[in-house]
Image 1 (cartoon, rainbow, N blue to C red):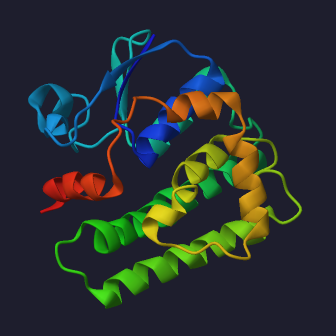
Image 2 (image 1 turned 90 degrees about the vertical axis):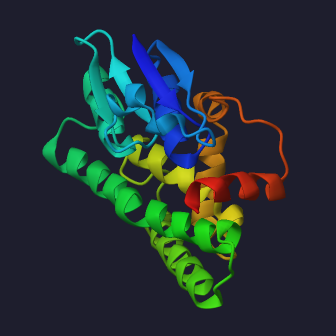
Length: 220
């Protein structure tokens, strides 16, 4: 049994989607970011960095794993699914996973901060991160031309990148002309396990303005 500590964010969705795809039994522990539950001692004992998501594998002496990319690799290795066993296939998947971890997530995250959450709008910063976000999506689009998935078969690389890229509108990133990316995004969004995973944990029904206001509380 896996204990999942998460919130309805792109990084959180990566793990809940993977758990659904892998068919692993898990218990959800929603973390209220606005209440700073991620900074409480009991959660910091699992993830010293105070960020979601995190898991605890009850079948392996209550082993904690934090960092979404590390969790995806851990779960894939635990089950022997969504990550090839051969050296080249495994490396290819991990390369595209790291592309998301080091590029897509941070750049889109900063676009969110400056375009949505910052109390002062700084045009240079907004344009810089939206432009870089668009560039990274163009890289993905180029990779996906003639391919159904990023690294051969459907993998944790697709899960990680999709969890961020499908939120491009929130980041203010235009995806006009990125047809291969759009087809891939639709292909993944249609998967039942993806739909189930993205609904975990339930997101309260609030407006975009309210969501931005709540997020701002954490950042300032």
